[in-house]
Image (cartoon, rainbow, N blue to C red; front, side, top):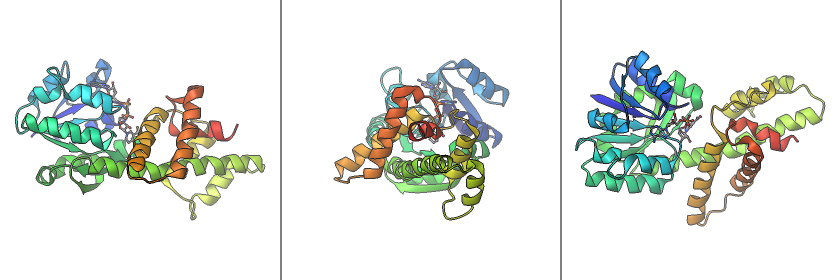
Length: 286
Ligand code: NAD
């Protein structure tokens, strides 16, 4: 089975490395040539563009910033869908609106291509370790054929239903994170105002009922003053806006999500869009 991998950034780079390590013949592309060269050094076959990947692959993965870019990569005469063989399976692992996935799946079907959504959770750490949660939507038979290649990237691989159901699951994940990351920031801001040592407070509470991935990973980064992106603020805002739109379409008011999105908008407006999501502390502890 020949695998394609398009988008070798913070997440895709690690995920692709794990696919290569698992022994798959892997064709790669990215807009940044240095990222392609890194994967070639690990054993991948570097391609001059996405279309060369498309022409070679049996299964293709994309890990791209947002839905507009996914659509641009897939569609039109210069799109991946026009250049892959009928019978190819494309798996978009980016986080995008469920409607984008459904639209791509329809167009893909016209080309005889199966299109799946498989967004992930677990951050760059999970991507590196190959321990991601992978939330899959699309054709069940195609999912059943893909176990080995998904297992190279993740340990919790779950089929969620038809096209877009993986993305809906990812949005539920982002809703759950939003309140959690904001509460971690508030706990640290509070500890500092009370004159506590934030590290001592962190060590005391992180193994109790307040323990969470957000506290362990982002809480520690805040205390260390490390705002470098694992997960970009701009990508989190994109996801929260998708979740708010989907909720609104179903007459569901997600009050906490609204408040957290507004705080992140404030952070982005003051120049924080390219920082990691832990930088939220800057608008909470000001
Ligand atoms: P990133 O910006 O680091 O990587 C995206 C890559 O896509 C870049 O290397 C970019 O050059 C490449 N790219 C853009 N346009 C392209 C094109 N037309 N053709 C080929 N390559 C192109 O982003 P990331 O953090 O890896 O996130 C990717 C996706 O995964 C986003 O949808 C994000 O929301 C989601 N996600 C990120 C994390 C995280 O912790 N970083 C976790 C889960 C999900």
